[in-house]
Each structure stands twice: as structure tokens, then as C-alpha cells.
Length: 353
Ligand code: SAH
Image (cartoon, rainbow, N blue to C red):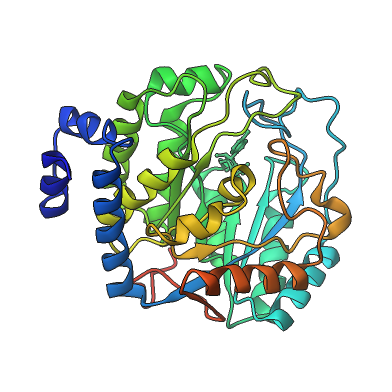
């Protein structure tokens, strides 16, 4: 194992130059394996063989934003738009609950039809029907007051990937109407409101350098999110990045190990994007430090429409089939799915402000 990796295992407080050096070791088999082994040791120390499941409900693909990488960006006139009604969302939850899901993730584009009041109503309905379940939102940037309203309505967690912690790179991926500063402010607001917060980024997005990744990891170290979502960038045919190469699976796996060591108790999914680029991607993710999977609970007829990137997996099967398939995959790499809320460590009763 490279010297820098040994040092990282002892103390993750390293300089930016050292981060870049460490990230540069992604091709060195001894280092990659050594860090994966340490990541798995830490993961087992806190979570044993457990893998948490989150039921992903993709409830709208309308979006007011125009993120250059994303297939459901406003500018994509070929996207076939849909939004679920409250009753349909509750149907997804009902099916999920019967299958053993105890976390529902409501994810969508930034759809203004879902006003604060409409969102709060949906959250309240899920909260009342499933008091034992965690409600996670992933609906982009809103004001602190909106986040507060959702929290009071019963939301527990919020996923908002920062996408990149480098200003210039942020500008490569987004139109000038969007800014990293706002994104970061949202993450800080969510934290203050007592949400379990998830940040994260794509691996290998156009223009990303080791310097960018070093900044991503330094940002995570500072923010200390409860969850971190990373997955390889995958081009979508109707975006300006259609011809860009996809991110690397091995780099994503290496980063999963680094993040597990950086934030030992973090909830770290083996993402669908990882499973899309490599048929064994999610299993590989679990084998290097990930401890969460997020099967799809959206209605089958809408799954293909939530088209963030090309060739997305699991768009054809019913939720039950997806779950059985995933449970087997998880089992094969020595772990098991559990039907628990799977809260972040140290979360007893967070304040609702
Ligand atoms: N509107 C919400 C949800 C976005 S979709 C929000 O802004 O948070 C969830 C994640 O999918 C994004 O944060 C992004 O990191 C990822 N994603 C989008 N397009 C992608 C692509 N082409 N390849 C890989 N991941 C992508």
C-alpha cells in the first residue's frame, strides 16, 4: 500500500496536495485493496452485515432547472413528463410498507406544481399513515422556511447532492442561474433544522479533475453529512453531454472506500448508477464500504420516464421483484437486507425547529 494511504488510515486530516496524491492511487491495486479492507472493517464495526433499504418514489420528472447532465432538465423537450397524485404516492408507500420498507424517499425534479403546501400535505399523510417510517425528501433547493415546513410536517431526512464543491466545475455542469453557494446554503439550512442530511456528487462528470474530487472530499469532511450519495456520471442522449464518456466504476468504488474511512458512520448507498454501468456494480459497492441500497418503488409505468441518464436499470420490474433480486445480490456478497428505518448514528430525537 502507498505511504499516503497508510497515513490516511491513521488520520484523515490531510492537506489538499495529499488528497490529490491519495486520489491518484486509484489504479494501484495494493492501495485500492488495502483501503477497501479498512473501509469494510469500519463498516462492520458500526453496521455489522446489515444493509438498509430505501424505497425510492420518483414522483415527478417536471423540473424548472437545466442542469446540463440531467435527462429531465427543463430544456429536454423530448422528456415525457409525469407527476404522481398524492393517492398514487400513498399507493407506492402502501406497497413498500407491505414489502418491509421503513424508509420512503420522495425524489423529483424541481417541480413548482408541488408547492410547499402540497408537499407538506403529502408528507403529513405519509407521516400519519406510517408513523414508524422515515420520510426522506430529495426535491432540490427550497427556502429555509419551506424546509422547516416539511420538517414540521414529518420529514426526517433530505438528500441534496452538492454535485461538485469546485466553483468553476459547478459552472461547467450548471447554467449561470444556479450556484454552488445556494446549494451549500441549503445543506446548512437542512442541517440546522435537524434533518439527517445527504450530500454527494457524480464521479467522472465532464470537467472533473482530481483537484475537484479533493475539494469534494474536503467539503464532506467539513459538512459531516449523515449520508453521502455518489455514483458514476452516465451520459444522457438528449443533453449536451451526450457524447461525453461515462465516469469510472473503479474510481467510484475507490471513492466509496475513502468516504467510509473519512466518515465512519455514514450511510452510504451502492447507487443505481453504479449498477447501471456494471451489472455487479452494487454488489461491488457493498464490498468496499457501502451499506445502503435504494430500490425503486415508483409505479412501473413511470419508471422509464424518470430518465436521468441512459440505460438506467430496474425500470421494468415490480417493486417486489426488485426487492427479491436485490436481497439475493446482497446475500451473495455476505450481507443481508434489514427492514429497519436505518437512521444515522447518534440520532435520537433531533429538534424540530
Ligand atoms: N432535483 C433533485 C433530485 C435530482 S436527481 C435535486 O436537485 O437534488 C438525483 C441525482 O441524480 C442528482 O443529484 C445527480 O447527482 C444524479 N444525476 C443526474 N443526472 C445524472 C447523470 N446523467 N448521470 C449520473 N447521475 C446523474
